[in-house]
Image (cartoon, rainbow, N blue to C red):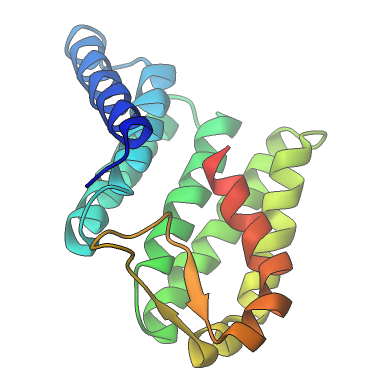
Length: 180
């Protein structure tokens, strides 16, 4: 059973998606609206099964690509696209499947930094995604995707308890940045 705060979050982001969809119907060239819509989709994806979450993230990626076709220098959309790629990567269960998503994430984070070099969140996202790429084999060797009470929690990975301590500093910061 979902907690009251989780149900409130779910309802809030469902409403945000509906508002963004209505706004899109009247103004499909609003890149800011597309980016807000994606934020809500990425939040909602956390409440879904893995296949449904993957579909939502793919939809989010499509919307971000549309926003970037409207405004190619929209740094927040580039950053969100990096987050979406990272979220999708964490939903895969094989290193060779995840690697291209992590690589794309690093590219999008770099583009966001190029557009707004003083943004500390973008800089940290780039740093962490690069670090994740460098330890990807290690992550997939030692870590497993997990569910908690039947639902995925924020794409977090669960590791052997002895390994988790060392990885938390690297992976945790990245996951926190995804949620910003």
